[in-house]
Each structure stands twice: as structure tokens, then as C-alpha cells.
Amino acid sequence: MCFVLPLAAFAAGPFDPRTVITMAIAALLALYVRRLYFNPARTKALAEVASGLGLQFFPELAADELGTRGASFVDLNPAPGRNCMRGTINGRETVIFDSYYKGQVQGTVVGFRVAADSFCRDRGVIQPTFWHVEKMGEWVFVFHLEPQVKPEKIAAYVEEARARFETAINPHGSDATAMSAGNS
Image (cartoon, rainbow, N blue to C red):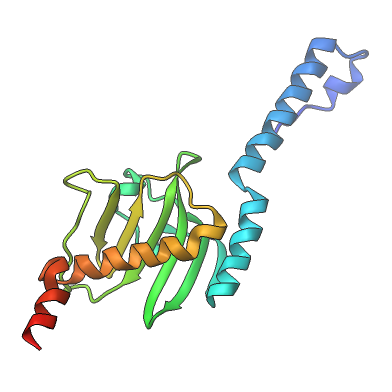
């Protein structure tokens, strides 16, 4: 947001107090919105989390870089992801980011790269549930309806998302482990 005043406004003489107050309120509001939009404390904390997990940190990545174009959680607006972490966790390329829509936080999303033709049982997109699993091309995104995951809970959130991802990509569902144990 940028306000531009012509120099003639300053040369006209004394300021109208209402104009000064309005300009001050507008400037404070702009700073407040900027602070909310680019929450530096969260960004710093998540950069540290990324380092701890052995991931690269990016303050912002485009929807095309994340593979989110067309995903249900972007609401037809391929907004960039913020506070992005990218790298390999347990041998699988993983991305973690905050999803935003019109400046509002939608939630923290975890994506796992898969082959484009791999099986995935989408959950929560057609039948609403707390957790959502959605396949978009080479990515399976897992997220839940909590607005943002706190930095200190990211590792546990990723592990929970990974467990749901593993179940979703298994054609036999959650019974596959029990079936393989019984066949041994």
C-alpha cells in the first residue's frame, strides 16, 4: 500500500488536523497489515524449524513451484505459499508451507512428491473431514482445518500428515499392514 501526496499539498499552508489524523491512521493501518501479512516472528521461527529438519527455507514460493495450482485449498486463486520448507524427509521429497487466500491464513500444508500416475485415495475433499488428503499431479497434499500449526509443533504435524499420506497411497488402505503381517 502506498500513499502519494502532491508537493502542492504541503505548500498550501497549515494542515487540516483531520487530514493529518487520517494520514497517521492510514500509515499505522498499513504497517499493521504489513506486519500481519509478513509475520516476521513466525518466519524466523519456521526458518529455524526448517534448519532443524534439514530442509531449505523460502519465505515465499509460487503456486507453480509448489504444485498447488488447482488444489481445493487455494480456492481458485493460485496464491503463493509462505514460510515454505522444502527438502527430503525419510527419503521422500517434502514441502511444508502456510497457505493463504486473500491475505488470510488457510492453514499449514504438507506435500509429498509421488509419481504422477500413482494411486491416492483423496480424503476430505469430497467428504469433509478434519484431515484432508488431495493429489495434484506429482504431489499429495495433506492438511487439516487448524489455521496455522505452531512452529514447535511442525515436526509432529509432519509425522501425522505422513502417516495419513502413507495410508492414502496404499491401495489396500489402513489394513495393509495387518494383511502383510498375517501373510508372513
